[in-house]
Length: 127
Image 1 (tube, helix red, strand yellow):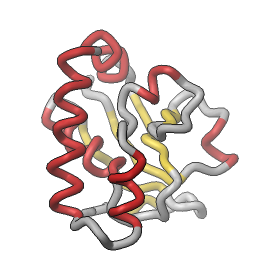
Image 2 (cartoon, rainbow, N blue to C red):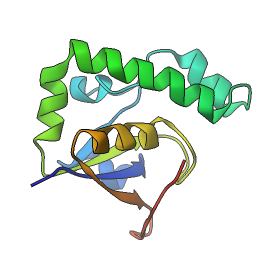
Image 3 (cartoon, helix red, strand yellow):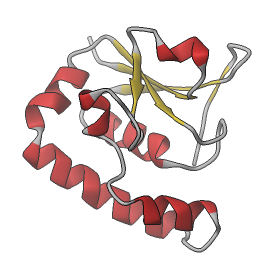
């Protein structure tokens, strides 16, 4: 069975669940940091509108490719799960790395199920 991937904004609801994976640079979870952006300047430039989503996507995909080559066992650990909820601090449905990561996981066989909103609704996010 393929990994089912969801995305969501970090909040108390997700912090303690087994399916959650904090993918931020601040993550205390070593597995989550495998997928985190590695340059805070790029994140800040995107948030300030100084970097286009397309440029950010290209940069972050290079981060993910390097991570996949260097930490394949951690990627396989995530891909072997039945469900994962990729978390970061960005607003729901806002373009950010969690959507790029979800897309990347789908190229490896996962199925993206959507963004989980605070009220529990699931919407498709097309960052």
